[in-house]
Image (cartoon, rainbow, N blue to C red):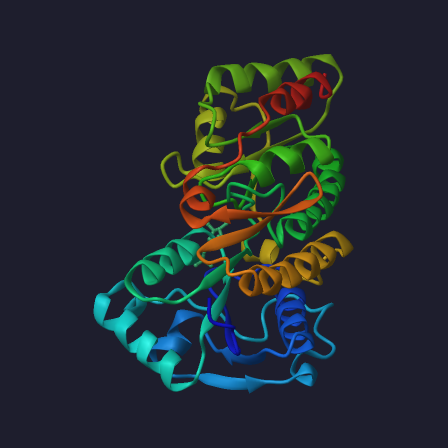
Length: 326
Ligand code: F6P
């Protein structure tokens, strides 16, 4: 095992609150252990197009509280080609980088796995995505902040929904996963959560809403996970409206606001622990693993497991949303 002298760090894919806290933790843990750090701009793009800058401890001052990523991020087409990855490797070598820390979601960690299978580069990943859709970790960096942003928005929508006695369909992000939808529905006392992991019977949903209105409710909020196949909140609202034209229904798509904002204390602590974990892992000779935290402990998760084996959705929570909304 050769000692690592210099690491490169990049953020890739959709930004997530807490990425800056992770950049800070990786940089300072590396420097603390005598390892030099280079910041790679715009994700894999910076490797392919040689946008690499020296990082010092001061480069990451005053960023723990900031959303977004000071390294910028991108979804890089060039890195999906063998020619692009060759250029990336050559630029890495020329910059003296002998290991990489990649902070991103499943696309970014899949890219890291492909790169590591072609070139002899130790890579450690950190789960940075609001979607929480990576296996081997209880939470991803950014998920908690996004969840709180959604809950805050739904609390506000409830004021107008109840004043106008309306039915709201609120679309949230999640890529193909329903964690944000399910847990925000539970945390904001919604009438239902529609998630890609479970087929939705429009009849049953309409019946549930109808029952609520019949009994005592004068408004209702349904959280819908984005889903291009079903048309998300817009598609669902149209189907329900056909059956129940008597309801004054509205659709709100929260969109990219869910990715912004100052990270919660939970995400900052998660990112700080995982960032330090990445440097520990590299010093131990680990490669091609994502740092996860399960039951409070740092774990090393092979990229293939992190990207392919999503955590199970807790189905009893769906039932709980229903029970608590009677
Ligand atoms: O992966 C994070 C995420 O915000 C997903 O929830 C969403 O589907 C996607 O990124 C949106 O990507 P873009 O910013 O490229 O539109």
